[in-house]
Image (cartoon, rainbow, N blue to C red):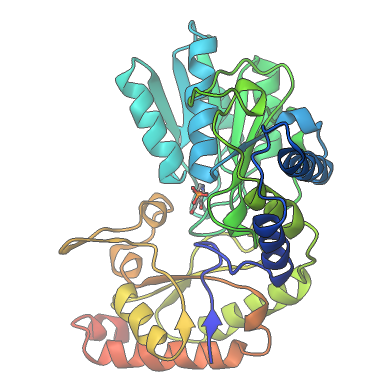
Length: 379
Ligand SMILES: Cc1ncc(COP(=O)(O)O)c(C=O)c1O
């Protein structure tokens, strides 16, 4: 049995998408800029996909700029605004953003930009009033993610957008983990990043929504594709795959029920904490910490039984790096190390008890060899 619970890392391409992408590879393989029939066929697929995606987003097709994915979209949003708005040298972001936002902001710091980081509460939620307080006359941009990739917290981005609009500041949201999962009104959002491989489309494709009128320049120069905003031959198969993925229906309610069943089961284990918000949480995220064990060991043990989860903390050489997101929500040290993230897909439905049972079995095994078990017993 294979239960893949790492859909926030990447998803399996939907069969419908794989079929369509294969068709494009084999039939409409032209360069969308070529003037002959093969090129024109590819262009027509590209135009159609752009329109379908724009319809799904609820925007003008000119507002969609195709990129290689979330990382590039975030870079384009942040780095692209800067040269067109040279008097604005201040950026506001949050402490729980994905590295593709945090590192890009850090990079902007090297070019004279001042960055302010808004904190989060114990559920991982940004305070809109804090964001408002940080906005200055020279603020170029506020960038706050839609849904957090580790703990699944949904941020109040529509309200942050309102504040930014009032203050005349650009607002960007990294919607890589939220797009198509949690509804979002783009009324007060100027820029939004999306990635295909998180939603059943291939890796290496995504887009940046750029509201009409936004002053932005490219970060990649060349042949002038994508209205001059993103040069490079368009990834027509990937783009068509992304449009096709949006047509596939996902039973969110069913997955949410599974998530709640798993959370209820996990809560019965001693020394456990569910991280994030129960109210403002994407339907498929479970992030859980077990006192006194190591998340990596748990992940590897589950792997042997065909259950694939991830850990919030990345293993850097010999040192275990802690999750900055869990630290930001104030999680205790001995819980932070024992965390795993499960991001569910439809294959979990009906297997909830099996998953919880396996986790409990492995946690018990690990606790037998943990130096912290006495403290746990005293809890
Ligand atoms: C919130 C968030 N932003 C950005 C990215 C980067 O997306 P991509 O892998 O398409 O570059 C990820 C990927 O994990 C993510 O979770």
